[in-house]
Length: 259
Image 1 (cartoon, helix red, strand yellow):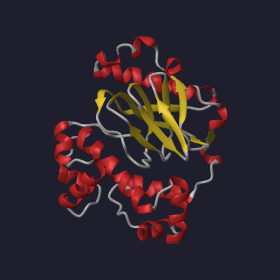
Image 2 (cartoon, one colour; image 1 turned 120 degrees about the vertical axis):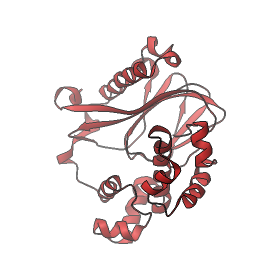
Image 3 (cartoon, rainbow, N blue to C red; image 1 turned 135 degrees about the vertical axis):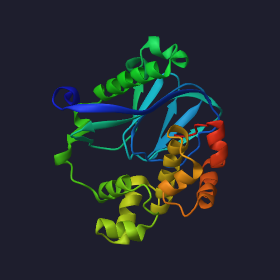
C-alpha cells in the first residue's frame, strides 16, 4: 500500500491493554484524538456510527480514525483488547468511518490465543505490529496528502482544542478563536459529529479525564484544573453523570469503560 512505500510515517502507541471483563460500555458519540483499534474476543458488543451498526465478535476487529464520531453498547460484560495510537505522517484520512477487518488478517494466532498472558512490553510490541498491519490493509484511496486536504472549520477548531485542553465548552469563545460565527461553527460541529457543540466538548473532556486519572496518575484536582473545570466538585459532578461513578471510585477500581 502507498502509505508504506511512498510516504514516511511513524506509529506511536499511546495506550494498549487487554481487559478480561468490561462491565459497562454504553457511551454516546465519542470522537477521539487518537486512532483506535478494538477486538472483543468474547461477549456481545456493538459500535454505531453515522446510522450504521457493527457487531464486535471474536472474528471481527475495527479500526477508527481520529475524530470519527461513534457510540458503543454492550449487552453483558465482555473481554476487550484495545490500542490507542497516533500516526505521524504527511497524510490525512480522506473520510471518517469505522473500518472492519477479520481478526485472522490482523492478529496472528500466536498473539490472540495468549493475549491475556503477555507482559506489558510484549503487548506494546504486538500492538505496534497490529496497528501497522491494519493500516497496510487500507486501500490507497483512504489517505490523501495533508497539503491536498482542505482544512475544514471543524479541523481548525480541533487544533485549538488539542493545543488547549482547558478551553471552555463555550461556542462563542471557540467561534471567535476560529474567526467565524457561532451559528456557522455549531452547524459544522453538528455535521461532523452528529452532536451539539457543548455535548461533544463534554464527551471529549470526560474521555481525556479517564486517561489522565488512570494512565497519567493525575489527582482529581489536577485533572479538573488541566481540563478547565472551575473546581474538583463541578468536575466530579460532570464525571459521575457521564460515567456513572465518581472520579475517586473510577480511579480506585481502575475501571476502563472507555469506548
